[in-house]
Image (cartoon, rainbow, N blue to C red; front, side, top):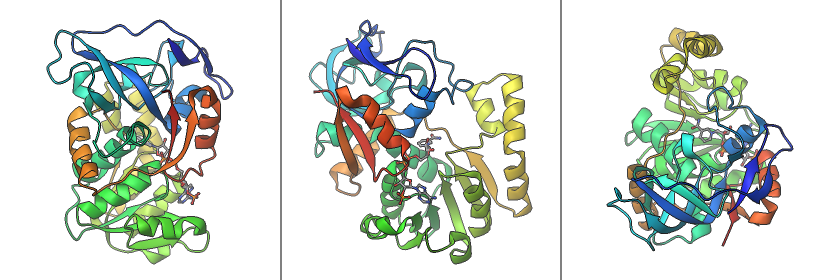
Length: 332
Ligand SMILES: NC(=O)c1ccc[n+]([C@@H]2O[C@H](COP(=O)([O-])OP(=O)(O)OC[C@H]3O[C@@H](n4cnc5c(N)ncnc54)[C@H](OP(=O)(O)O)[C@@H]3O)[C@@H](O)[C@H]2O)c1
């Protein structure tokens, strides 16, 4: 099958080539890929930034989210049958959506929202699961609570703003001047234009912050929280709890302890909590997200669609850090 393959880690690496068809396990569905979402995670894996956390065997087929059609189901599969239109974020240990076919455990798959085409559906799983796990599972956002979502115009931000509004929260976000009206249209109540204004000075007494930006933004975010507030970061630094959850070695756990020491101490001094989140695959949560999409509570935002032959250009576009919503590659 045709696939986008990483033979060795590095910035310019990755090529279109042929790989064997994936092996179908008992609980897997074999999905014919129609479209795949492209994320900063793909370029970070390709560049080798995740070697320690995700020790993949090379050559690796890249790609972390997909929409497509079930071709075959393993003998243990009850939920899906050939012909079903599905979407998924495959388990982190079994990625490879930049290919004509992928085998995915049924637990990680859901039926595609009926109101979306394949390209839009492919843009949803990784970012929507991230937003869900940050805002619902971890922040436990309630009606009337205040949340700051950084980078509201990005892949995660565009969905997180809409999900937080659906949960009844008051939503502040940061973005550049060009995207102020856009994030308002997604439902943001307070917009801080980072080109003109400093969010740290404008916002007070927030219940939660979802950080996806750099270390300086992370530190400043502590000051907008009220006591008991939660700072949740998806862009690091990883913390010891995450290392434990991932079952990482003692050495790596120590590294994560050190990397997050400063922010954890600063959080404690301000009587707020810090945690790192690395999203997980979940077919069950994708079903809930699909329901919200079909009820028109959340709509995906696709910035650009590339043909599969332009995979490298799609990754380069994501790497600019300027995508407005999501980037998608189309295979069929
Ligand atoms: N841990 C996890 O499970 C997890 C899951 C998903 C993503 N992530 C990470 O989260 C980060 C964001 O992911 P993404 O998919 O949302 O990225 P993205 O779509 O590539 O983000 C691009 C957006 O970020 C905005 N932006 C850039 N600098 C900004 C700043 N200083 N202030 C406010 N907005 C800014 C840009 O808006 P302007 O053009 O207006 O600046 C652009 O719209 C990445 O590092 C990714 O790897 C982690």
